[in-house]
Amino acid sequence: MVFLTLSCLIRSRGPDRYWKVQEVLKHARHFRGRKNRCYRLAVKAVRRAFVYATTARRLKKRYMRTLWITRIAAASREHGMKYPALMHNLTKTSVQLNRRVISDLAITEPRTFLSLAKLAQARQQEGFRAALGDGKEPSGVFSRIVLLQ
Amino acid sequence: MSSFSRSAQQWATFARSWFLIDARVQPPGKIATMCAVRLQGKHKPIYHALSDCGDHVVVINTKHIAFSGNKWEQKVYSSHTGYPGGFKQVTATQLHQKDPKAIVKLAVYGMLPRNLHRRTMMQRLHIFPDDELPEDIRANLTEELPQPREIPRKLSEYTQEEIDAFPRLWTPPEDYKMK
Image (cartoon, rainbow over all chains, first blue to last red; front, side, top):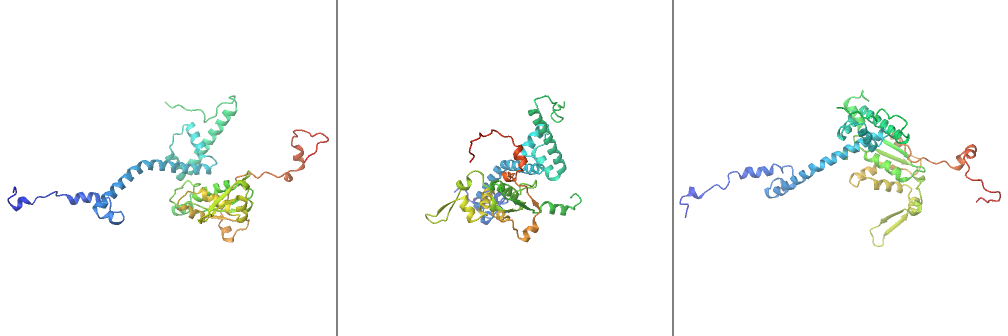
């Protein structure tokens, strides 16, 4: 025998099992059933939850963008324009607002959004005149792209 | 609108409106798209799938709906009773004669998203085959939507001057027999 006294036979296998377990269970406290109490079930559930969270972080960006687009489309239809026409004409007038900002304006600043819609409509009409008018008319006010240096 | 208090403004923004659509001589598909957009709330800039922002839609005169082309004879509505040999196929004419509301109802049902909100949205859709509305629904209506299709005039609705002013493409010879 190697250990000849009782105090040498008893050894501590790891003093921090409680805290290692709590590290996992703290992420499972809001789960349903025994998954929120029992470590073996909680480990599997927590790993799955983290996987879902990672994929959802990538998908959230897509969902938010489609939501912004839906909202902008609804607001622009209220003013008699369609979403593709609005966005295309805004980019042609070098308005570099992204969809998040435009959708927030549509909700909280309706008159600002109306002015953006009117700007896009004016640019659209200028585009139609340029396409149908055989180039004898001067290009309109909004078609002149100002290059800021 | 800007003079409202914050709570009153929020109440007004999220209130549910009642839309009226007259389906006389209109294509049921176009009626159904307008209904589906408003039942989901996608006509509002505050739209969110979870925020229950859909409105009520009342469709009248569905008895006088007008399919384009030969769809009255060619469009087939299929269903199965669940029992063996229970596959039923009905043309649009037969379905319309049996139930004048069914065509618009099925069209809207197919255009709504396939989730649990669909049944709630269908409950907010009110279809009437005629012009008659119950008093409580008539009292709730807020807005009438313009019809999607311009109704063409019949020959009897043109004045004689307009008919004469229309350019003639060819003059028939003396002994030509018109049908």
